Amino acid sequence: MKLIIQIPCYNEAGTLALALSHLPRQVPGFDSVEWLIIDDGSEDETCRVAQENGVDHIIRHTGNQGLARAFMTGLDACLARGADVIVNTDADNQYEAQDIPLLTAPVLAHQAEMVIGARPIATIEHFSLCKKWLQKLGSWVVRLASKTDIPDAPSGFRAISRAAAQRLIVFNDYTYTLETIIQAGQKNMAIMSVPIRVNEDLRPSRLVKSMASYIKRSIITIVRIFIIYRPFRFFSVIGMVLFGIGFLIGLRFLWHFVQGEGQGYVQSLILAATLLGMGFQTLLIAFVADLLAANRKLLEDIRYKTQLHLQDDAPSAHPAKVQEEALDTPFPVTPATGHDNRNHYGH
Image (cartoon, rainbow, N blue to C red; front, side, top):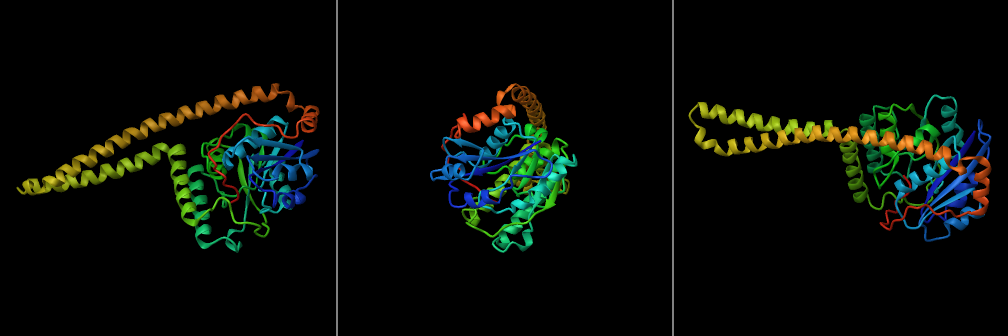
């Protein structure tokens, strides 16, 4: 059994050494524990710090592509290197590394395919009241969309089985945390949460540039979650509301028309017709979106089966080859490139 601990990084030279110093080299239930860094186009000495502190694998993006892309690059790299379980953590030493066995134990016991570390949000002093409220709101939305019971959905400290990692795909460019839980719930993966500890705050969160920006991005993320994963419910609710309001206004016009006062309420008739038309069209969109969601699931299944064949045939999936690659090419470059500067890290 092999455990790979992955850390997405962007300009983390100041904190990465401390985070690595706390990572374990032995975890109960695993024959080997390896470390993998995803350098998302860092402009500092992140790669050098990683190499000097004994990181086994360093994957580099040629440009900054954002946290979600770095996370998925890490999953693909870990799978290619034969990981049976993948643990994701942050480079700012936010999470207590000694709690990694708490995350991996349920996966080893076949109790869960994904385990999320639940932080003590209420007692974290450097979290503002607004951020704590948004964390709770995001977790509630995820529970509603995924039909799971995860109290801290935005937590990036998590363990993922090989089978689960092969089936995950992230559409959001901002963050992966909420979307991966929803996918796990929709794919009927066993998912659970365990309480974990956190360390002192070393730097401001890269995900929260400003509270206004964080609120805007959080709202957009939540809305996109419902559009992508609950499209029929999302559009049908909007359609029924519009249709219902138009219907009530239409009844009001009919009442006055029967009373012989219809000429004074022509505006109500126009508004009712407009709302009824909008509601009907939105309901049609709900059915079309549901068909697109079904098509997306089929594409995800095709991707999953293709990945299985590619990873089984890849030479780097064998342990002997992994050591060779780690020694000969300490800085492999992923094919992905991008320069949209979505440098958002930390939760």
